[in-house]
Every structure is written in C-alpha cells, then in structure tokens.
Image 1 (tube, one colour):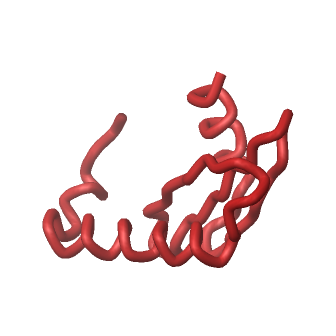
Image 2: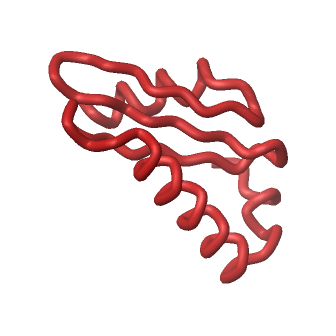
Length: 76
C-alpha cells in the first residue's frame, strides 16, 4: 500500500514543490527538486513536517554527492 501511495503522490508533485498528504493515519511527505530528483518519507500524524523535509533534503543531497548526475541516465 505504501509503495502505491508514494508512486501516486510523487506523480502529482511538481518539480520544485514539497507537499504532505494525509491518508488513513499516515502522512506521506513528497519533495521533488527542480532538477527532477525526488523522494518521500512516510510518517505518522505526530511527526513534524519540517523535520521530514529536512531529512528528505539531506537524503537527496547525500545521494547526489555520492552518485553525481548518473541518476539522470536511468530509465526505470
């Protein structure tokens, strides 16, 4: 279920945007950077959105620092 929700919500998030969607007691925090790289964090209702987005930003920065722009050539 979480896999389906994250894919669906990521498709509905525009590049450069952050959004939090609540569904059945969970919150899916989505962030897509302006270059198209994105990620999600699924939390309960009590987890602060600000902390989730800081975590996502750091995760995406670490990913880019490790792999560079090689993710842009992936088709899947």
